Image 1 (cartoon, rainbow, N blue to C red):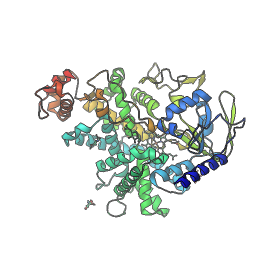
Image 2 (image 1 turned 90 degrees about the horizontal axis):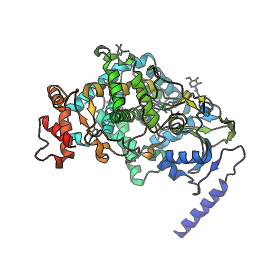
Image 3 (image 1 turned 60 degrees about the vertical axis):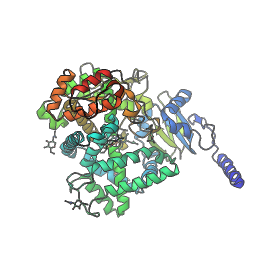
Image 4 (image 1 turned 120 degrees about the vertical axis):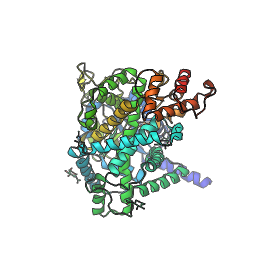
Length: 542
Ligand code: HEM
Ligand SMILES: *[C@@H]1O[C@H](CO)[C@@H](O)[C@H](O)[C@H]1NC(C)=O
Ligand SMILES: *[C@@H]1O[C@H](CO)[C@@H](O)[C@H](O)[C@H]1NC(C)=O
Ligand SMILES: *[C@@H]1O[C@H](CO)[C@@H](O)[C@H](O)[C@H]1NC(C)=O
Ligand SMILES: *[C@@H]1O[C@H](CO)[C@@H](O)[C@H](O)[C@H]1NC(C)=O
Ligand SMILES: CC(=O)N[C@H]1CO[C@H](CO)[C@@H](O)[C@@H]1O
């Protein structure tokens, strides 16, 4: 034992000597942290936003930090982002992507296949084919919502707004991209459940910080997901010939990729395509529910959409909604844009300074910190303003300034440049359809009008759209009275209309939810109460 410790210490010292790094004048400010090798890894993993904001304050818009043995240069000057995003010679996207692919999905694919898969995605998710997906996602969303409301009424208790949004968009997206024209597709609820378990382990997988039991869990859940994504009936093509998943699998097969690896690649695509839209829809709904002005404006715009164009929502212009979504993503889209420095490169900063990036280091942009939450760009950046991206005349606002200079990147939820998000239009369309359906068909409101948005799970900075800390129902009492109802008017009148249509089930759930959470205020009422009035009586007590 003692020898092991001594050996370990010696190895650590040796390592420190070998990796000792001196700062040259042309290097960005260097901050190694006090812990050998690990450097700032712990703080970084716990709350990257807080950490990087502190570093920005200390060092400015560019600095190099040591994180788990690697030197990461963080660039926070949005005026220099283009230098990074357009440079494919000195900065490499696929190296780090390959590392993550291996860590998270245990997937190894040659570089040229990443390229090919993107070509296939572009073909299917942009232009004419995107239009073809429009009704599909709408139909699935519609069916799923209907099913959600009519079965398993007893399950509502566990359901928060986050799970509701995530599950519906995930399932609709999965059915659209992975199940279209395939009637025998795996039950999406099963996939969703497993996927959420996997999603919870994702950041730890990427950082390699899983505990032993989590490692086991991640392996088994990955296996189950791969099995679920495997085509029903033993590997034969069963999806429609024109579908994206068909083309993608075909490409992998043609490249001689084995069956196991194909499934892992599909899991990766499931993550890339379904991991962000649901959480984004949750934040948007949440912001609307906690900002009555925003809700009114969006509802007003939606009300202007005629029933006939509903199925073609795709073509309808909705600048107010678009601005609200942009604003939501400004606050919650938190990807790191990471590149490997494969050749020495000089970065010109907007203040005239020049810095040299060292080969072998990693370069990281964090658009959430700047421009998205930068007070020099957006006034009161912590506050949700649904019309932030609207001009006075109602047109989309695209001119934003930092220190008097107009910015190209004033918000950057989708990345940018050659590696920007391929699914952007599809994601926007899906979220819009979902919010439209929830707001116009079902209506949703908060019981407590002073409710606040939940806190962010700080461990997820860097991994796309953020998620709330825990589930809303259990951890945020303000949300427990979220009430589902239909139409306007008094509660009683709404109850009446709701009872006549499909929506009575929604109301019933609300009732049960309230009964469960407010028992002291509701003597004599039981969950078996099947009329509407007690709900309003209860609401008054919440
Ligand atoms: C709100 C939803 C979404 C957000 C915020 C989002 C964000 C992003 C970002 C920031 C990147 C760039 C990563 C980088 O540069 O390092 C990216 C890449 C990508 N996204 Fe999305 N995405 C969303 C939805 C989707 C959907 C629905 C799909 C597919 C249908 C999709 C497919 C992809 C793919 C394939 C890439 C990789 C592009 C490449 O390899 O160069 N995304 N996404
Ligand atoms: C990747 O695909 C693009 C076309 O989309 C092509 O121009 C480029 O040469 C390809 N790169 C590699 C490494 O195959
Ligand atoms: C999330 O929603 C699904 C329905 O889509 C439900 O089966 C599940 O129990 C919910 N989970 C939680 C934790 O609320
Ligand atoms: C669907 O899958 C089940 C189980 O894999 C199989 O028994 C059934 O025959 C399939 N149905 C069709 C229509 O392919
Ligand atoms: C925060 O996210 C991490 C990673 O996804 C997850 O393991 C953890 O359970 C989450 N914490 C809460 C309170 O939800
Ligand atoms: C607006 C729009 O493009 N709608 C199309 C959605 O998809 C169906 C077929 O899948 C078309 O018929 C619609 O015109």
